[in-house]
Image 1 (tube, rainbow, N blue to C red):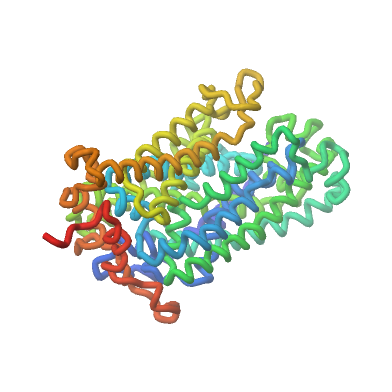
Image 2: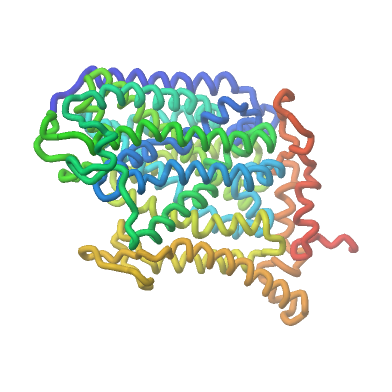
Length: 577
């Protein structure tokens, strides 16, 4: 394949435009947070992200390279089709559920990261445990989409995959490093516009190619392969449900989502942004679905691609760039490629910022350096943005099963973090004992269920399992079973521990986690520090743009934010001494 100078120029123009917008956003907001909360401005953007930018940035967090490429691939692959393209509906519903139930309590209490409520209720040790699957999910996601980007670019302009990955990562890291959430949010607006325009411009050209048959006919009739609408076989129903619940509920407990929620100017705005992003996810999936359908409706032996179709060449995952390359005029394909590379960066920058935000605040500041100055936290964030970005890039270049690692880590987010988030926000009386037990049970059930992508064989064989080559595949919805087990274990063990200590069955000295009866422990002091220390505050009364402040109920004092804990006997501070 010849080297395409035009393609290289097109991508350079896209990348420079995005870099310019990122640096401009950083310069425009450089004085935000200068009164001692610059670190918080980097994490949650001064809590004055408006509806337009907020809606775009929340949508762009989901609508990335994996979302666009994955949706097109699911529609194209014979035997799966649109019926298995679960991401658009699944992520849209996760945003709706997040907006209805999770956005308001999180934003009303003025948390800075998703891990704050865990450290507030369960203490810093449990916060550290929750950090592990949370940061794994963000890092492997960034690595997976960098990897996809390298392959996508190499399909069309035939340059070295490693070079394209490194350059893309450097640009995303650079503007995230300079401007934090502001740069990420403003570049998301540009990237989402590029994706929408680039893919929609490509669709009519691809659809009118002589080798492409009517996609309306191929949707329900077998022409070159099975109909692209697809179907769910009876034996696969439970697997379909398990995967769908994983997307819908497992799509909620991500720092990348809550970073946008917590950057909103009020709790009401946080909810509205979630609903806008849900609509945006559905709209942005349409061109990807059409491109997958076009791929399934093409006589590939009538194109320059060759006599063998992409599925038989094991290139089904690249169907979107292949359609752009072989079914569109050259300049249109380069524009579409720029759109896809923009999509990748819009997700990668969010993941890198999310990982560094959680580390700087919840691990470095709240667990080790509670007296750290704001300037010190800013520098820790900048260093970790670079380190996490470099690590994701290295994994994209070196790891053979980066997608397998991401599948497993996203499962852990669903199985471990989602039930813990439910408990910490909505179930009064849960404590650290229940949280640790639920964490371990969920992790055990997930690992023993196996993971084909990582060639991890199961130890527990659930009903309906079968062997595919040398791999065992589970049909039973064991991921949802593990999530429910984690939830009920947390609740059950928490109330059991509460009863045993408060009834006197167990002496107070055995409360080694200081979670039930140790009212003057250092650990409980650490919890109160989260809202009472001058240097480390939840910042309930964070500066809010007056025109966005619709209701007074969206902000609380620190005391009110802590009232949920004060009212709970297991972590209350005795006031009669």
